[in-house]
Image 1 (spheres, one colour):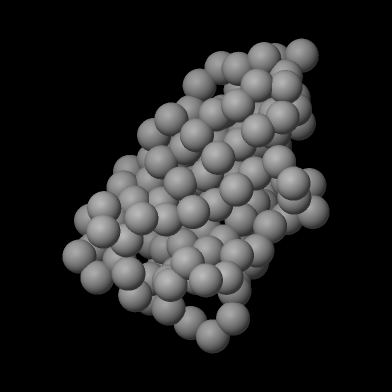
Image 2: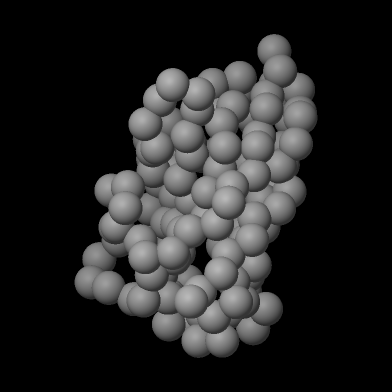
Length: 125
């Protein structure tokens, strides 16, 4: 069973930055695609960003393009989400998800086989 642990969330003022980390227990993490999703209270889980197993291809939701950057360090079995110019509407629980590499980049919720418990990000205005 692959386990994921997110960290780095917190409270930040609008315009600020946070860097989320996702530690993955899978030793062959380098063969796994990874994504970040988020869920705000009363809303559906939504796609934020994804990165292929090699790190060579990424995808972003329109709402975060130019502000968020997804990356990974396969040697450390860790993924990251750098969030800059944060807005109050970015407030949500952020989840790291992963699955064995597939064709293309999956952006639909429940496309990934494993996910963590989430980390809260709160952006104050």
